[in-house]
Amino acid sequence: MDRATLEQLLREAESLLQRGEQNIAHQREVIGTLERGGHDATAAKMFLRRLESAQARHIADRNQLFKGLAEQS
Image (cartoon, helix red, strand yellow):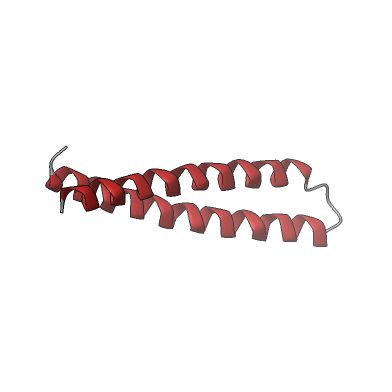
């Protein structure tokens, strides 16, 4: 893959990571609201775990892009 493509993919990955962090923060707020209201937050917590798992995969993908760029230098 050429450098320009790797750089574009890296920008997209960083944007995805930023949105992921926002989604995770929002989901934590939802859980807090549910728990403060005495509601069952089990499903919300399961969704949070899925978001966090996806975020971990996105971080790994981003790190691979960094590695690819470093190897081209």
